[in-house]
Image (cartoon, rainbow, N blue to C red; front, side, top):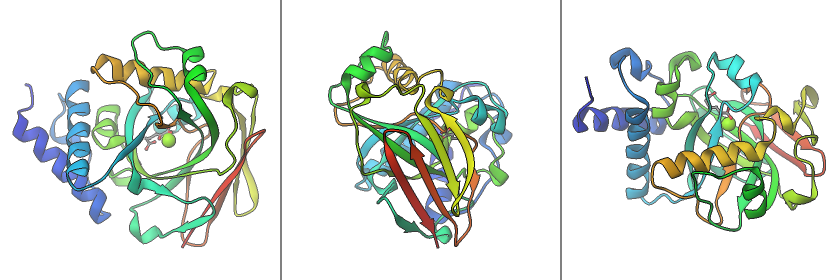
Length: 262
Ligand code: OOG
Ligand code: MG
């Protein structure tokens, strides 16, 4: 049974309200078990339209569940895509109030900023690198609106892939001057390293996640505009945070980025 426009609008309004009011909910597919991928992305697009209508600007996109560590942590097998608005961005080395969120987790990512528009289908790693002005270390703060972070892929797509906040490092480098596959990643919580990895943990090359995003947009008749920020996906498992915690990410050749929670 296909969902009506009224049902899609109802789901979008509910999930958006949960985000704005920091409250959790049960997953969408509990109510609509036959929801399709198209319907899940249609809900996400309605949330985006609501945000734009209230003055937000889309400044980029995110790929999620692009590493084995994240897929295993969340029990899923396919990448997902979401959008980023200006209100999600937080300055490097500043603080986020946990009371503004439901149950935040933080994950280390490689972020891209594009110089040229990118179009799919047929986008690939080299096209992404050719269009990428710079790369930098990024922290994504995810905050699934679903109780206990328990969801399936369609539910998480409808919920804009748990997007909540992100922080970019201030040291930007030309992505073509580094081997993003072998760039070493050190992820720290409260001064202790908690995970080590390398860029290749994301689909073999983090630019592959950007290419997948561009091909996903292409299937929907959209392009990735010049100047977009793209988060290529958590490299390691996401870590839960509470007030008092500090998270820091170092990526070889790309400097570091940090955030505190109060
Ligand atoms: C879904 C979002 C995943 C990533 O980088 O893998 C994501 C979630 O785990 O809540 O942003
Ligand atoms: Mg992420």
